[in-house]
Image (cartoon, rainbow over all chains, first blue to last red; front, side, top):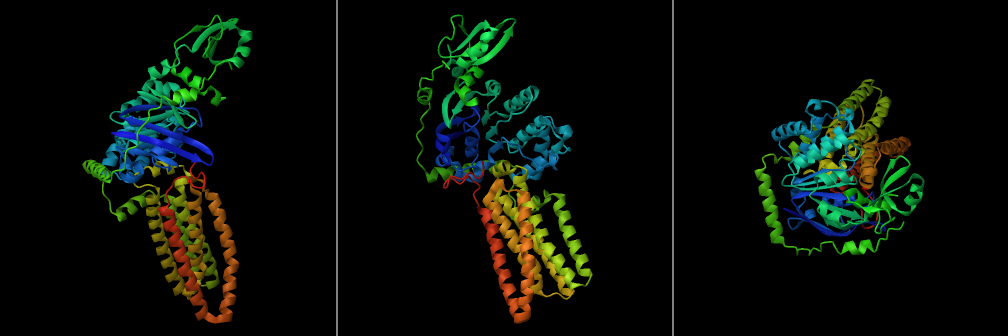
Amino acid sequence: MELRIENLTKQYGTNLAVNNLSANLSCGVYGLLGANGAGKTTLMRLLCDIQRPTSGSVCYDGQNIREIGEHYRNILGYLPQNFGYYPDFTAYRFLMYMSAIKGLSKGYAKQRSLELLDEVGLLKVKDKKIKTFSGGMKQRLGIAQAMLNNPKVLILDEPTAGLDPKERVRFRNLISTFSRNKIVLLSTHIVSDVEYIAGEILVMKKGQLIHRGKPHEIIHSIDGKVWECTVPANSVSLLSEQYNIGNLRSEGEQTVLRIISDDKPLDTAVPVTPNLEDLYLYYFSEEEQ
Amino acid sequence: MKRSKKNDDEQLKTLLQQNIPPKPDSQKRQMLIRKLSADAADMDYLEPESFSEKILTTGSYFSPWTWLAFAVSLGLFLCGVKSENLAQAYSYLLCLAPGLTLILLSELSKTFGHNMWEMEAVCRYNLPRLFLMRLTLISGIDFGVMAFCFVTFHRAGGLFWEFALYALLPFFLLSALCLLLMRHLGNRCNRMGLLAVIIFAEAVWVPFTDAFWRFQHRFGNDVTEKVVLCATVLALLFYLGSAVALCTKKYYGNTGKGKIIWN
């Protein structure tokens, strides 16, 4: 089982949302990391065959997904960034509806919907209308609908955005549970999500894949570029203008700064072990400003 | 900022894995399709359904308001015809067309209105097929309602060309116009916008019907009947064409002109 992305490009007017991107995905969880506007959503839509690429192709087991159409959709699960729902539907009815348009038999759909509602912790509220659900409950329902057809390719676009930490942890665990023997692509700009569950991380910037690797490998690429130093509180603003500050912590009159920089920022600065958040800041600090 | 980028992008681009695109192989493609079909056959949850079954399943997920709206449309019309005042029946007929168009569009556009299009697009029965199923069912009911209304209207003394002028023509034209708008606008389609189009078009149609009466006084019933019938057939073809256009559209971004349809 393999999803091959070949020189994929998507252009909107003069803007290249995805720029000649190539990658090969086999079974496993992939975290797609990138700032807002990096092209993550466009890439995911292209992988789902919702949008047509300007050039390049996406192949499942060597065949263009556009050509195998329905066969590909049978093994595809997708949770879009903006999870929509019919507000008058209950959670159970919503899953039954999604099952119907996924072409699942009624008997299987009933059983699978109840199973999934149980797994995502919504069984008790299955007869309540979705419009009464919290953000976390809606997202859990979203992943349940993506899992209805037991997909081989699962694509989740920023599934943890807007969730509180408890819900995020819960959601991460759910994804890990569901990810066995699947190609799971998870996009986010919340780095801790991918750090925990992704076997491999793809870093996307300006429509291109600029880095790919296991979390620890990718983090190693910025070894020696993360520093910590203690400075007087009144010099923080000056340093903030000069350097990329990852974190600052007040300790009385002093402030402990975490600085991301190629060069040693101050004589007193000591190198520290980088984490994924530092990596994100290293690549995307300018875009986020 | 002191941090130098040192041609980050160029350096990191070299880390990209270069993949050699496979050559298209129709035999391999057929083999994969056979394999996926065999896999699907093993998955007892993927059920082959006839088109009528699919339509009925789609109908079972219609909003209860849709069925209520059909019932109200019929009820109002029956009340209007019962008065045995044909002039009043014309007014009810004029309301019937936009009412039925509104029901049709409400069911079709809910996909966009509730932001369901992305999820529905990646399902086995994707957006064009879903639209086809909804459109077939609602159009079928609409034609049933129209047929029932015509029989009632005819019994009350109304003529077919009158019915076509007040109900069929505006229904086909309005629906076709709105379907084309939906096709063109995609998820930018706004229900209130469509409602405004319907109201505006109906407001234009009312004086147009008066013009037809003047035409009838001048040329007589036969000629008027022929003209209205021809116009109705053309409007029906326009409606069917719009329906086909909506159901066959590939719901992708229009890359050719650089327009963003779905983003």
